[in-house]
Image 1 (cartoon, helix red, strand yellow):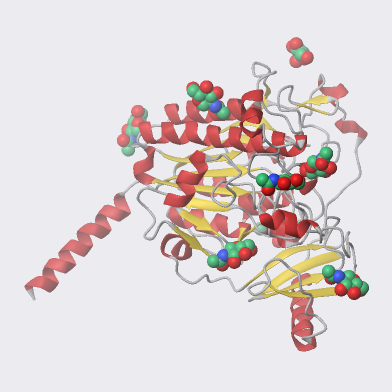
Image 2 (cartoon, rainbow, N blue to C red; image 1 turned 90 degrees about the horizontal axis):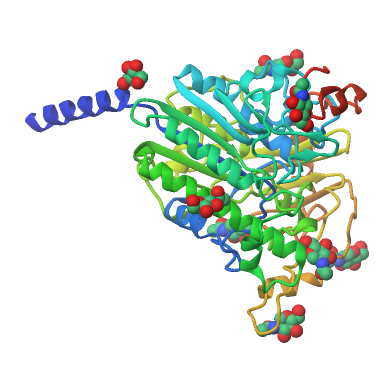
Amino acid sequence: MAVVLHLLTFTSILLMYVSSARPPHIVLIVADDLGWNDVGWRNPQMYTPNLDKLATAGVILNSSYVQPLCTPTRNCLMTGYYPYHTGLQHSVIVPDAAGFLPANFTTLPQKLKELGYVTHIVGKWHLGFCNWKYTPTYRGFDSFMGYYNAAEDYYTHYVGPGYDFRFNTDVYRPTEGEYSANIFANRAIDILNSVDPENESLFLYLPFQTVHEPLEVPEKYENIYSHIHNTSRRLYCGMVSALDEAVGNITAVLRERGFMDNLLLVFTTDNGGPTFAGANNLPLRGAKSTLWEGGTKGSAFVYSDTLLKKTKYLNTEMMHAVDWFPTLLHVAGGTADAGMDGMDMWPTISNNAPSPRKEFVYNIDEILHNAAIRVGDYKLIEGNPGHWNGWYPLPSVKEGLPNATADGAAESKNCMVNISADPNYQLFDIRNDPTEHFDISKKYPKVLQQMTQRLAEYKKSLVPANYPPPDPKSNPKYYNGTWSPGWC
Ligand SMILES: *[C@@H]1O[C@H](CO)[C@@H](O)[C@H](O)[C@H]1NC(C)=O
Ligand SMILES: *[C@@H]1O[C@H](CO)[C@@H](O)[C@H](O)[C@H]1NC(C)=O
Ligand SMILES: *[C@@H]1O[C@H](CO)[C@@H](O)[C@H](O)[C@H]1NC(C)=O
Ligand SMILES: *[C@@H]1O[C@H](CO)[C@@H](O)[C@H](O)[C@H]1NC(C)=O
Ligand SMILES: *[C@@H]1O[C@H](CO)[C@@H](O)[C@H](O)[C@H]1NC(C)=O
Ligand SMILES: *[C@@H]1O[C@H](CO)[C@@H](O)[C@H](O)[C@H]1NC(C)=O
Ligand SMILES: *[C@@H]1O[C@H](CO)[C@@H](O)[C@H](O)[C@H]1NC(C)=O
Ligand SMILES: *[C@@H]1O[C@H](CO)[C@@H](O)[C@H](O)[C@H]1NC(C)=O
């Protein structure tokens, strides 16, 4: 009896403590175009000591899916809805067309602000800017330093004819000429120095420009890889190491300032690696922009000093980028709206509980006439999965130094065969064939039929893609040479 009472008292004190404790800080780092095989914890060729330390001390996510492209994945992170439910399923938002994340979707920072968080974004937005209402400080962020579009120059911050770099709503010039990984790391550190970790809960969304094209990096990072012949690969790897250093600088300040006592750090890529621009996804098939695993299976991990019950292992439970919204909201003490595509993965991530997710939609693109879904171990692909269909090898290295993995050499023979077969349907067993070598659609017609029926059900809720043509009113010449809101 005494023991029971004692336990009850202890439990209620614990509950009181938990409910009055400040919600944890959340740092969500998104790498742009980082491939499956471009991280040190998987590929010894990569020099990413800071990321490796966090990943191996945290939880490496081995089945964390993302969209094949930038805008759609950012859409998932910010809304918890698949892009085929927001109209962002086709391609990406291009600078001169009026694409946007529709205003009626509540964003993750908006929800976190309701819970008292301070919210900052540093880096790439890529969810629309043709009207102020689509830009970050109108969508839940207290501050924004970064750029609206994609693929700008890392130093000049120009995309085509327009300058694209802002601090909040203002065009920002002081960092013109500076490499963006440094700018963003320094801005993140300024934010950390401005927040009192004991008094405020911080949501820091850090979508780095790195390692998207153009392939640009200061020489000191490129030189780490001087043994790599291929210029694209050498530059790309250097960029990955610059990103790693930026993360190292930021996490050092997180620790110094005391954030780490109550913080969840999430690191994920936005899509698979562009093998046509230095990246590598081996052993996975395909690349960025395709529905293959190489385009959609993301490099990702979570790290926390205090919040994870189980650490230092490979988590193989199924999850998708839409799940971060309800999961992070849960961590913050909130709940997501019913009917959201995303699912709360916190028990899965924090304690390796079985994933509540049994299926997901890779994408449905009615303009390209392709789609893919996963149900259990099976993956159905409808139409042409995309332009890059092979298993692209790692570029060779110089004589006398260790070569790329044996895998790379062996797979290179295959990489040009049977490209764009374009059958109506292909079926894969991802558990037994994670590299998508064996289309089993002919062998298992019943499964194929069930899968096509399931896809048809998903398609019923498709919102038509909003992919408008270029609008001359967007031209930076009307905005003093900058990409600016005001033309939609
Ligand atoms: C936003 O509006 C679109 C179009 O009217 C609708 O399909 C969608 O369900 C709405 N989403 C939310 C979250 O309100
Ligand atoms: C990291 O910090 C060091 C030391 O201050 C600095 O030299 C380096 O440029 C920083 N790297 C990045 C990517 O910000
Ligand atoms: C947090 O800091 C502000 C300003 O320093 C102060 O006004 C406020 O009372 C503090 N809140 C808590 C919960 O300590
Ligand atoms: C270097 O690698 C890229 C892919 O990242 C490839 O397109 C290019 O052909 C390679 N160049 C050489 C000289 O092998
Ligand atoms: C590395 O690969 C090249 C071909 O690209 C080959 O000639 C060389 O022998 C290999 N070196 C080692 C150490 O395996
Ligand atoms: C490529 O297609 C041909 C003809 O359809 C087939 O015989 C061959 O086995 C295929 N190769 C691979 C690697 O799938
Ligand atoms: C992790 O994912 C890779 C790539 O899909 C796969 O080959 C490997 O079997 C997975 N590991 C586990 C333990 O499931
Ligand atoms: C236009 O841009 C230039 C830099 O290109 C800047 O010096 C000038 O102040 C800007 N003018 C206005 C009105 O913003």
